[in-house]
Length: 384
Ligand code: A3P
Ligand code: MG
Ligand code: MG
Image 1 (cartoon, rainbow, N blue to C red):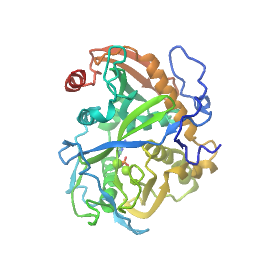
Image 2 (tube, rainbow, N blue to C red; image 1 turned 90 degrees about the vertical axis):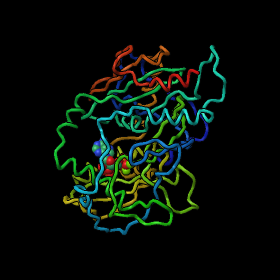
Image 3 (cartoon, rainbow, N blue to C red; image 1 turned 135 degrees about the horizontal axis):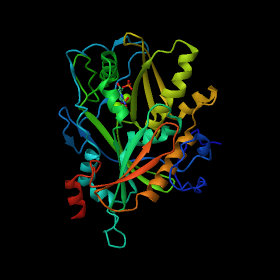
Image 4 (cartoon, rainbow, N blue to C red; image 1 turned 180 degrees about the vertical axis):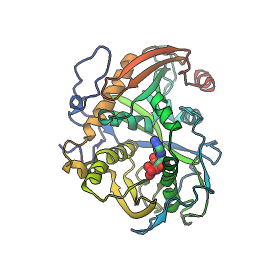
């Protein structure tokens, strides 16, 4: 099959075969998803937004940064500034889909071609609205043996909104983070500061403050089999070259990882890290992942580029490693399962889908509950 080379498709193809129907749950066994690569259209950027140092929303690209290539062995100290030049986003504030919904209201004309009627009350021309990060979790589910997830789904004007709910296990983990783990989470953002400039003509400023409230997000539209998707994802930076291809092809994903010293470490990197990196960047069509490998002491020792389209080739030497087709077919079947399950069109009804490792995906239904996530300001504006 050629699907591992560059599996975006520009035209519609045949619909892949469906799994044997299951009356209640959805299987997460990878063996059930090893079929041809599904149609996944080249993602198109339909807009973007920025969140500033106080997490305020702007319908523009003011927070987009420019990639400044470091030397191959840069010795960046990622620990620098953790104590005195770090402003951390308040993770207890659950933003749900709010920023995306704000973007939709500001750009509605780009999304709805037809006038809504009783027969076809489709306010937006998409089937699903969600964060890229939620889709990444879906893609990796058949290989996820440690962490479960909860996804809340609401059907409103025939669009399905998917928003994550924190699991009990994730909440406990957040509370029990060690000081070392807290500091290591800073390292990824510090690497961004060493390699990103605020303007095309400026240089990175490693002496500045790292503020994790700041973000630039792309909004892309695409289609997976018969599911029209609109999702947003944070983008670390873009190519400086003004002649670079347009977004999302000019975007760059930055990562840090522990340096690889043993065959065991290499195998784990391929089996677990590259799966997450691939899924995250493949979804919005980000073509390059640039990795800073750091030593135990948080010093970046080498920088390496991983073209997203080549990641799945690197892993082929690994025995029973992950496969992109399993990830995409599982995601497609999950979305089909959601469409079939979440039938009541009501902004205060939530279908809560739940995954626990080694189990099927199951769901429960909640009316006017703590899980409702579409804000009144959004429902009012879309309805009027
Ligand atoms: P690294 O992954 O390079 O360590 P992203 O790579 O998605 O742009 O995220 C930037 C950084 O945010 C990460 O850098 C990491 O430090 C932190 N981060 C992102 N997602 C996280 C998660 N689920 N748990 C902990 N830290 C996370
Ligand atoms: Mg990022
Ligand atoms: Mg990153």
